[in-house]
Length: 258
Image (cartoon, rainbow, N blue to C red; front, top):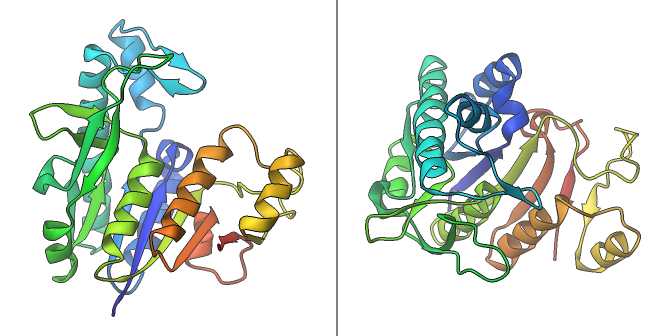
């Protein structure tokens, strides 16, 4: 069984042209099949303001009305996704860009309204890896953005970390999957002011202690949920850290286990 690397990059990498160029050049040189998943960076917010579309956030999550969905589709599925594909091609890595609608690869349901109406936001219900797997087996790298569809003609803004874990789980039926959440800086630290205090191993037991001590909190909580979800879904390896962890064995990063 081939080993597949599923790699997610966040906005801090996308927003920094030099950092992105370096990452893409190194990512392109990774041996074996690989999948890249990306978030949106700051461009969607900047374009929203330029087009006088109000940016609405609740607890760090974007409210996606119809106008915002149009902008997100242009930015995520267009500008950012195609730029990444072009950069990969320039680094001799053949790549194809995907939304969840392409190849019917990721189907979602519009998030039901509870206390907050998030608008056109999707929760993943099904992943179809048929076409992406065909591409992988011919040496082509799929590049996924954070947009899915409901199977009825509606695009949906969907959390990129969640898409990454769901893709990793689906691919584990055909590959030995290693999942990497990459950031510009180390994310899981004993001391947020000390970059060398990386927590190198997190499992179900010490995770509870880290929660109780407030070391893992806020925006890291949903990331951890996706990591453990992937492990329960038969993903063989899950890591969080700087992009360098993919290319340099001496870089400290966090590995999660059950």
